Amino acid sequence: MEDTTIGFLLIGAMVTLIVLGLPIGLSLISTAAVGVWLIRDNPDLAFRFTAMATYSGIQDYIFATIPLFVLMGLLVSISDIGKDTFEVAQALLRRIRGGLGMATVGANAVFAAVTGVSIASAAVFTKVAVPEMVRHGYSMRFAAGTVAGSSILGMLIPPSLLMIVYGVLAEVSIGKMFVAGVIPGLIIAFGFALMIWVSAAFFPSRIMVRAVQPELSQRPMPAGEMAVKSLPILALVVLILGGLYSGFFTPTEAGAVGAAGALVLALLRRRLDGPKFWRVLRETGLVSAAILFLLIAAGLYSRMLSMAGVPQAIGDMVEHLGLGPYGFLLVFVIVVLLMGMILDSTSILLIMVPIGAPIAAGMGFDLIHFGIITIIAVEMGLLTPPFGISVFTVKATLNDPKVGIETIFAGALPYVAVMGAALLLIAFVPWLATALVT
Image (cartoon, helix red, strand yellow):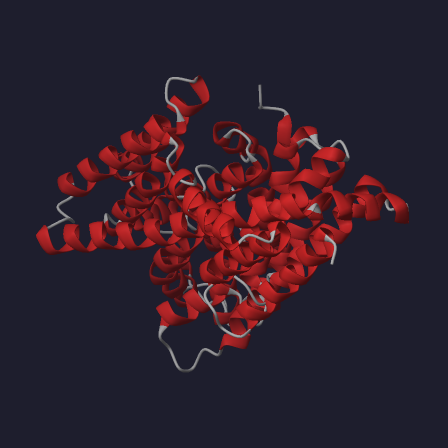
C-alpha cells in the first residue's frame, strides 16, 4: 500500500475515533504513531518518533505564551472588569437605537483585547448584559444571541489563543498573527453594530418585546465614574497591545506583563482572596496542560502527514481539478464550517491546519492571511448547531429552563451571516489582514 493511501486512511480513522468519543489528543497521537509504524514498517522508530515529538513539541520559549494569557484572562474575568466595561459602553450608547446591543458588542471587543478567550467573554456578558437588555424590553432571543455572537471577538481580536495555536501549527509569527487580527476584528465588530442598528431602526419588532422604558435608557453616568471604570481595561489594552505592536514585548513577554497587570488589578479591586487565587491557578494549569498536550499530538500528526505526502497529494489533486487558489480556499472553508458543527475550535485547527497550510503556501497564499480566514471560519462554528460551544456557554450561564437552546441559536444566526460576509471581504481583499503586518 502506498504511503499516501495510508495517510488518507488514517485521517479517516482519526475522524472516526473522534466521532466515537475518543479524546482529540489521543486520536491524533494514536493514528500518527500507527501511521509512522506503517509507513516506515518499524515499530521501534514509531515509538522513538512519538517520544521525540513529545519532548521537542513544546520546548520552545513561545509556548509559555499559552499559560500566561490563560492566567491573565481568568484574572480579568474575576475582577468585574467586564461588568464595568459594559456599563461604560451602555452609558455612551444609551441614546442610540439598539444601543444596549451595541454596548455588548463594544464591551466584548474591548474585553477580547485582554482575554483572548471566547468562552470567558460569553460567560461574563451573559451575567452582565442579558438581564440588562431584557429589562430594557429586548427579547431574550436577541439578548442571548447578541452575547453569543459577539463573544467570538475574543478569539479574533488579539491576543487570541486560537492565533497562538495556528501560529504554532503553521510555523508563522504569533506576533504577526496578533497584528493581522486587528482590522478583521474591527470590521466584524462594526458589522455587528451596524446590523443591530438596522434591526432597531427598521425592524424593531424583531428584537423588542415591549417599548424601551425612558427612565432606564436615559440614565447618564458622570464623567468621573466613567473614567474610573474605563481606566483598568484601557490600561491593560495599552500595556499589552502597545508593547506588542511597538515591538517592546515579544508575545511571551506580553503575556507575562499582562498576567502581572491583571493580578495587580484583581488585588487592588479586592476581588481576589486565597481560595479564588488557588482556583485561578488550578484552572490555568488544567486549561494550559490540555492545550499543550493537543499541540504535542498535532505536531506528531502533522509530521506523519508530511511523511506520507498527504498535503502534496491534495495540492496535486486540487491543481489537477483546476480549482485554483480560491477554489481550494472555498473547499477548505466549507470543510471547516462543517467540522464546526461537531468539533470545538482547537480540534478543527489541529486537524485542518497541518493539511491546509502547506497547500495554501504552495498556491501562493500568505499564511498570515490564510490564518485569519481560517480562524473566522472556525469561530463561525462556535455559533452553529449542533455543537456551538459559545451558545451552550450562554445557555449554561443563564441557567433558565424557560430559555431553550434553539432560542439562542436563532438569535446568533444573524451574527453568523455578518461573519460570513466579512470572511468573503477579507478573502478577496488580503491587505485587510496584512496591512499592519511588517
